[in-house]
Length: 280
Ligand SMILES: Nc1ncnc2c1ncn2[C@@H]1O[C@H](COP(=O)(O)OP(=O)(O)OP(=O)(O)O)[C@@H](O)[C@H]1O
Ligand SMILES: [Mg+2]
Picture 1 (cartoon, rainbow, N blue to C red):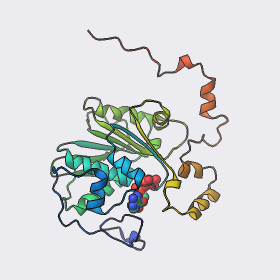
Picture 2 (picture 1 turned 60 degrees about the vertical axis):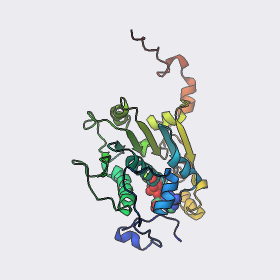
Picture 3 (picture 1 turned 30 degrees about the horizontal axis):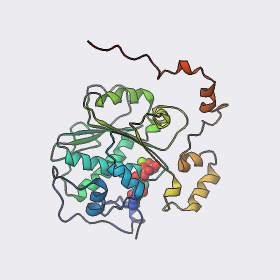
Picture 4 (picture 1 turned 90 degrees about the vertical axis):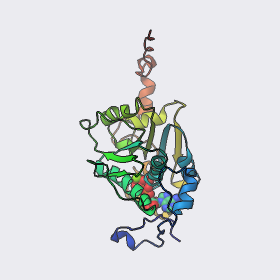
């Protein structure tokens, strides 16, 4: 049996590798229904078997969730499932996906659509958003472009940063306020990309409100050792980043960020700003 979850109607080029295709769920649950916890729902409804760490991600209730996992770990698929589960349980909720490109966000949406179509949920888009799902309970999931221009005037209940390490700090900065007043959740998923940016900062931050999930290729027996070796030979400076999730300094850096930081005067740390004045 394939170790890969295959959508109902894979594109033709994927058909060759497909060895198993789940069937449309016979008693597809309606939206608004109280669902089992996400990992159970994934198994029972889609025959998608999450591994232990994926289960933890699916069932995590934390409003601040950050995944630092290797390439092809299943980040987008697992978060697509989690997002769909959330949307089905929360009528009128809004889930926004931010990525380096709208198309990449569209990949996550495509996974969610694959799962939704197995439930026979009618395919409806959020008006104005190419990569989107509008559920019968009026919950919306949509991907937005990587831009500081199109961001204002939105609110969200869940804000997802897919491949967060390549989303710019400027885009992060204009999109994070989507959850400022809703008390919404922030889920970030990525493979590291150097020692810079908000993903790097949150991962290394000691803030206890974040649930941090770390997983490397060691936890993915489906990715064969010979493949890793192939990657290592081709791009030895990158494979530790891609498959062992190391925040390696950019090629050509003379000094690592850790070393640089240790040379700074700690009183200059911008995060140690004076407290805000108390309101009367
Ligand atoms: N538990 C699982 N069971 C079967 N297949 C899985 C499982 N988890 C992930 N996969 C499969 O692994 C492949 C990679 O998944 P996905 O694209 O979500 O990973 P990713 O970490 O987002 O990858 P990338 O780093 O390229 O963005 C997909 O074909 C997906 O269906
Ligand atoms: Mg992905």
